[in-house]
Amino acid sequence: MWIRTILLLALISVVLAAKDFYKELGVDRQADDPTIKKAYKKLARKYHPDKNKEPDAIQKFADVSHAYEVLMDAEKRKIYDRYGEEGLKQQQNNGGGFHDPRDVFSQFFGGRGGQEERRGPSKLTEIEVDLGDFYRGRDLEFEMDKNVLCDHCRGTGAASDGDVVRCGGCNGQGVKVQRAQVFPGMYTNMQVTCPDCQGKGTVIRKPCPHCHSAKIIPSRITLSLHLPRGAPEGFEVVFDGDSDESPDWDAGDVIVRVRSRVAEGEGGWGRKEGGLVWRETLGAEEALLGFNRTILHMDGHEVDLSRKGVTQPGYVQVLEGEGMPTYGDSPTGNLYVHYSVVFPNVVPPSLRSDLESAFRKTRGGKKRDEL
Ligand SMILES: [Zn+2]
Ligand SMILES: [Zn+2]
Image 1 (cartoon, rainbow, N blue to C red):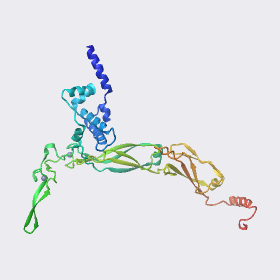
Image 2 (tube, helix red, strand yellow):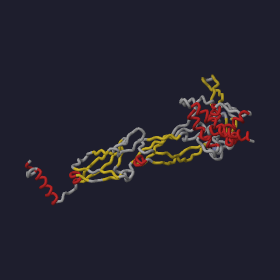
Image 3 (tube, protein in one colour):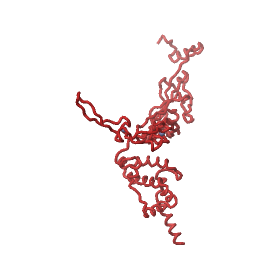
Image 4 (cartoon, rainbow, N blue to C red):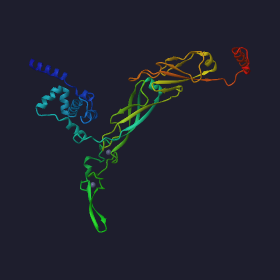
């Protein structure tokens, strides 16, 4: 009995030191097959030695392929869940071997992995958010159109797998030999793509009732992204493999580019590279005599704009560190306050005479036209 206990303890310690296949694929322990498949697909493409030249890519590729092979095999997964990798090794010694990671890959993508699988087009989409969202940072969710493979026929277009049959027109060859006239009375044999099956060699006997042989179904997906504080204009996020699906290719990426717009209530704000611009309008008295003003920044904190003395129209006041927050290597930006001045439409008579005498005093009592 004690021998068994020791063995079990030894086994547990090995299990603890071993790799976690679920973590390897970034899925949780309850993940179903499609989830595991999707996770593998993404990682295998990322680490495939033909594409990824990082020194540890080969190992990562082997690890994810191995993890995928175990978790997609119901029996192996059960053993792994109970006894860990060590349990699998025991089973392997009894005849259940593992494969070359490239074989796992080619089972999935077709071909022997050496060939790049065909990828569908990527989609670029731009979304606009308030300038304040760039300042504050924001989690965004948005919807997008996406064609997905029909889940009834899984992209075959047929009612069932048995309804994809060999094309009678070309006998499954995809091509036909036709006699064509080159000159009057002179004929040649020409090979042409079979018009019945468009060269595929198979035809659909009974169309899929779900997609009517379109093979894909239009749908809408929700994507979410995080816009970090201070992100640059045109900030991009790539959603790997989230573009339109098709039986003819491996879905391309969705690239989302985020731009800012000036929102209602943000009328005075603008962006200038790492900095921000604020437009402030002064009255004549403030422009001449100075002023005390504060503005609310986009996160609600107050910024003091007060000045003593004259402010010329078009003057730009620089407030260091009040621009966009730090992002990556870029330092905190400055806030550039652009001033304009509005004069009253009418100067009331009493003010006019006061101003005239005040100005005359500064001229040493001389009238304006005496200068
Ligand atoms: Zn045909
Ligand atoms: Zn279908």
